[in-house]
Length: 259
Image (cartoon, rainbow, N blue to C red; front, side, top):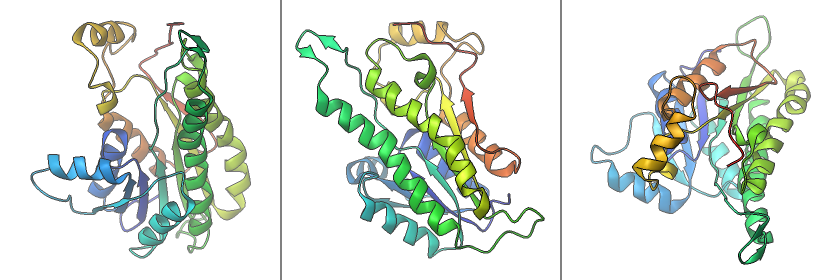
C-alpha cells in the first residue's frame, strides 16, 4: 500500500514507539495525526527545540475516551483519506497476584485493560469505520487501508508480576485474526506487532546493571530494540499487502524467563 498522500492516526505519538512511528510515516509522505495525553505532548514539545515536525500534528486525548479517539479520527480524515491507524498507546503494570499488601489491586488491573486493550479496540473500531468510507486504492485487490496494533512478547511469555499486562497484550494478539476476518470485506487489513524489550522512555529509569542484564537475555542482537526499528516494521507491514491477520514478534529471538 502506498503511504504517500494518505492520512494516518498514531496513538501514543508523543514519545517512544508512537513518536518513532509517526516520524517514519511522515517521512514517507503520510499526513499524521498523533494522539496522546496532554502531559505527554507538553513534555514532547518542551524537549523538541526545533519545533513541530513537518507532517505530524499532535492532538491531546485519551484512547479510553470514545469522543477523544473519534475527534482524532475526524482530524486525520480532514487532511486526506484515512488509510493507516497505528495503536502505540499503552501502560505497563507490575504487580504480583499476592504481594506484601495483599491481593493484586483490582483498579490497577482494570486500568491496564482499559488502556492497553480497550484503548486499542477503540482505535480499531473507530478508525476502521472511517477507513471503510474511503474509496478503494487503485489496485486489483480493492484495499482501503490497515490498522496496526501493538502487543508485547509478554502476551506469550508473561513474567511474574505481569498478569494484568500479559492479559491485556494477549487479548490484543487474540483480537487480530478475527478483526482481520471481520474487516476483509471492507478491504482493511489488521496486523499486530509484539515487541520485546525496547529502549523507550519507560525504560529510562532502569539502572545500568538492570539494563545490561536485560540485554544479555536477548540472543541476537544482544541489546534493547530501538523505537525506529519498531517504526521500520510498521512501515514494512503497511507496504506489504499480503500481510494480514497475524502477530509478528520483534524480539531478537528473546523468550522471557519467569522473572
